Amino acid sequence: MRLKLNPIVKKDLQVAVRSMRISWGLFAYEAVLALAFMFALLFIQQESAYVFSNNIYSYLVYLFPVLAVTQVCIVALIVPIMTASSISGEKERQTFDIMLTTCMSPFSIVLGKLASAMIRILFFVAAGMPVMSLAFVVGGLSWSTLFYFLLTIVLLSMFAGSVGIFCSAFCKRSITSVIMSFVIYFIIFVLTLIPLFFKLISNEGYLGEVLLFLLFNPIVFFVDFFVHVMTGKPFMEGASRSDVGFLTYHLAQGKVWMFTSASCIVLLSFIFLMLAAWKVNPLHASAGRKRRKKGAE
Image 1 (cartoon, rainbow, N blue to C red):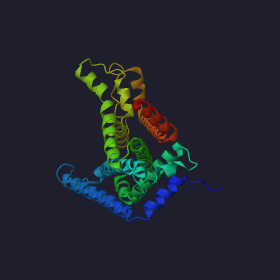
Image 2: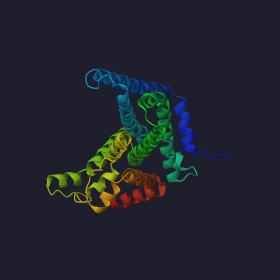
Image 3: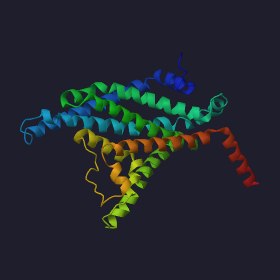
Image 4: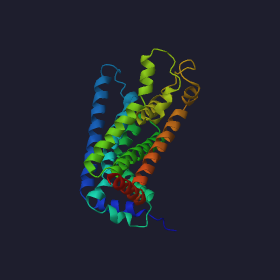
C-alpha cells in the first residue's frame, strides 16, 4: 500500500531541493554548530587548567546544552521565516486562488505547509547530528537523550510553524507576516510571565496556580528539559505545598510538568492552525467581503 503524500508537501519540497538556497543554508547551519562546539570545547579546556584540576572529561557533558541551545535558537528563528511566507507568498505570486480550486480542504493546505517546513527543518537537524554526536560520545550522555532532543525540536518546529502560518494566512505581504510572527512570539513569552511577575512583586509569598501559565511558554519547557537532562530533576523540584497551589505542586513532580507543557504547546499550535484554516477557507473570506461591502453601503 502506497502512502499518499500531501500535494502541498510534495510541491514545496521539490521546489526547495532544486534551489541552492537549502545547500547554503545547510552549510551555514553546520558552520554555526561547529563554531559553537569549538568555542565550548576551548572554554572547557581553558577552565579545566584553573578550576577543574585538569579533569576535563567530566565536564565535556556541558557540550550538549551548548549545541542544543544553539540549534533551538536557530530553529526558532528559521521556522517563522519559512512559514510566514507560505500563504502570503502564494498571494504575492497570485497563485493563492488557484490553490483554493483544488480538492484539498483548507486544513489540509495549512497542514501541508506546516509539514513541508518541519521536514526541511529536520534536514538541518539531521545534518547537525554528526556534531551533536560528538557531545554524546565524549560527554557520556545516553542516546535516548538525543532521541528526546529530536522530539523537542519537532515540537518547537510545529509551534513556530503554526504561528508563522497563522500570520501568513492573515497578512497579504510576507514581510508583514514575518514581523507579526515574532511579535506573537514575544507576546506569548511575556503574557505567560506577567501573572508570575505580579505575584512576585506583591510579596505575598504564596504563588498559587499562576505558574500554570508557564505551561504554554516554550522557553520554560526547554529550561525544564535541559535541567532534567543535566541533573535528572525537574526545575521546580524545590516547590513546596505552602508556596504553590495543589495542581502546580503535583505537576512539578518528576517529568509530569515537561509532558504537560508539551501537550499545552501542541494544543496552542493546533489552535493557530485551525484559525489559519478558517482564514484560508474561501467561504469565510467571501462572507467577510460581503459584510464589509454592506457596511460600506
